[in-house]
Image 1 (cartoon, rainbow, N blue to C red):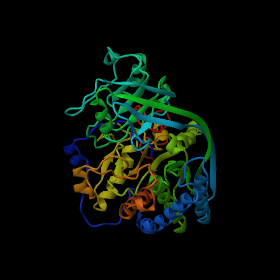
Image 2: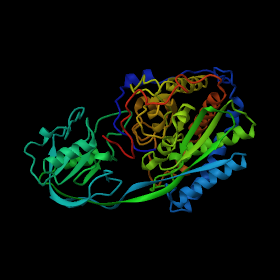
Image 3: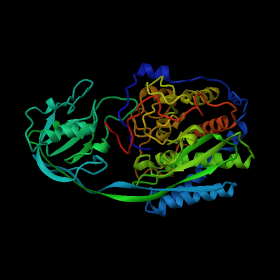
Image 4: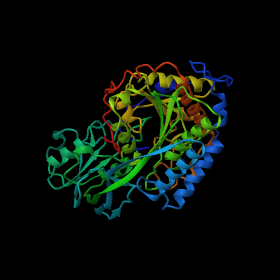
Length: 509
């Protein structure tokens, strides 16, 4: 899963209202069309999914510790998926594509005065994707930062913030309000030689506002080097008198060649149910939760549909995307190859990205926009309702997560295809209210190994994996067996009602 952009804050009281908690006996779940999904849910087990994850772990171990797009680890992962699907009776297809990838050859962030301190790349700072190269050593000037109260910040969003800024200095800017690209452009216009953007330091239940900023400058790019760091480091730098620092970036682009894996059931092609998960990991680790968990869960769903001899009314297309961690590349490419008629023939997209986080919340995408205001295309509310009704029937709590363009549903909602899915949390911090409802540890990330080498087979919660896998099986079969179109489906094409501005590997703001 790619890194989040800024999302609206949800208050504790709002969270309590948003969370659905209905306690009752677990009954067989009947969809509106009368489909009983119990047999499939019983067959799709966490035990089998974990066996797939163990294979993905072994593949990563044998391939430099990762399964990133364009590497031997991804190819071996795809070959494993293909072999499992073919053994179950599916024909598989590879959809090839290429794309340029931003690669960092050298990154330096260091204090040179009044003391000498060198910060660690990834752990303490990151480059901003699309940043210019450069090697600068200069005094640092803080720009309109707010370290008190709620830390509301418009730092660097207006040219007037830089009034009196000493040309040639490095600008220290706080996250908040506007895009990183605008902050960087304003700094460059004021004569800054480089920019350090530190996290905002405010509580946001839907986003990490304390850790290292992992951002992008988008297509605008920058004319000076730009890096992101944590709130704690930014706060310390802002309070240091006589501060001088070195900021250096040396980067290049390389061409990645990779492919998606697709497999279809029988059924009506004009009501295709696209069930997707990204198979690639980040280069930093094996990606067993992100997103081996989603890939293995939909793989096992596909296998058990075949094993049970289920004949769906509507075609199910299982898609294992590549290039997600580099900016949703594979799923975007898939959608870009669809004709207007093909788009109309896609009834729904179900997306599963990180479904076994070790400190989890059962998040369901906010299809109707009731919690965050960003609704999906017509029919996305129906998808959300199917998930919510299922979890309610099992006496399991859920909470909403925003359609913020962070995962592979983006290309589908951008083209008016209803979508929804599940998520158990990434780098965001679990609140006290969430810990009371879902268990786990407040004040800790949902997944402390997100985008790290420790995202291994030990980073999986088998209990939540079983719960999410059952919901995946139920919802997949529900839409596969329906004889009526999802609201707005097959009428579709065109853009979603909302402007989902974010698209890419990192946060825009």
